[in-house]
Length: 466
Image (cartoon, rainbow, N blue to C red; front, side, top):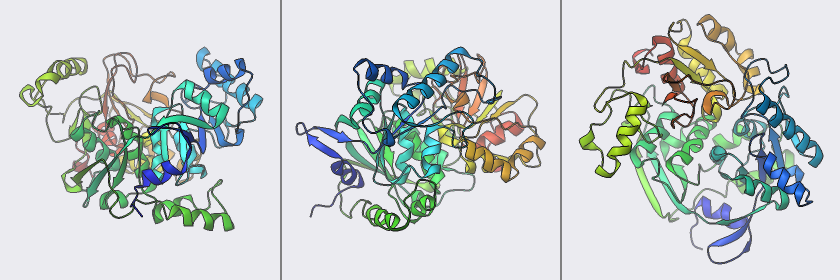
């Protein structure tokens, strides 16, 4: 039997019908929806007189455009209010489970799926959101889709897809102190560029990956999309199984045993061939920071922005345009640059481990006077756990405020916008022009690098404060 990759195993099992050698009707196990990309899909469905084919396969939450303070009150911002109310109406009409504002399971779509046990190995998972790749951390094929595809899944539970190429990225070795999973993925993207995995589905492997917790693995798969990949995944192992077991919607009893046997069959077979394979050493990675306007423009925090001679001639114009937007110059060090805002949260770094890391770092210290900080849990369950562990108190004593769940300043669809020209160290996933607000200047980093900036008021190597 020909050895198969985990990507092939899952993909081939979900092909309903081959249209031609490249294209298939593809079955979707789980569909997540939210208030921003679903309204048009439901409108299209209703115009055609269609019902949702399998409502029990779809889960809804309000997250992208919700306030992160006073969630018990009527939403003040009109667009947000209309979107959230429309989601509730559509879910009620079509029998879809909705975790709306103030529901104990409410939160960012890519946080609640794993924490509830909905996300499981071997699944195919889609959502009208590019960072659906987060769920790949469980050994699932998960990817974002457009609104017309949201409608297609609602109507048929299937998509028409072409199979992507397969890439494996191996990280071997032991991470330095102060280096987190966010640093791993920012390092990879800095090495291969923001388009280096275009056309591929990526398996992340190696001893450094296997050593990570599930929440850390989610951060890496979340940002696979930022290297141009269709999605990313990590083979399930005992860490995966221990995380899922006992969760609200995880299999129980005999069903657990049956599922576990299947999950253990998923890892890539020895000798399985990938279209491309890359290798990196964990020891080469230090805390990372971005300096430009795409996630590939990153460097080790002790380094300097590249000089023009080190930039490919065809890329120099966009490189200089990016630096002009950021107010930086070629050759400048990143250390010591002033920070105005710090954002902890998003589907990338809004989980309990991220809040623990940030709170542990700032405990006994004080927030810099020049920094405004937004600490936003990824879900109501994360918020409750932070309360239970005393993290809110630690944060407040250090001068920080724990807000309520939502996507918040990651994409600034709500009121949480970085003002024009201000610098933000953000644990989110994108640093595009205007991503965190018109004219906002974003530097991506890990929670502890963000914590170091929040305490000192400037870009600081967190290792000097550990």
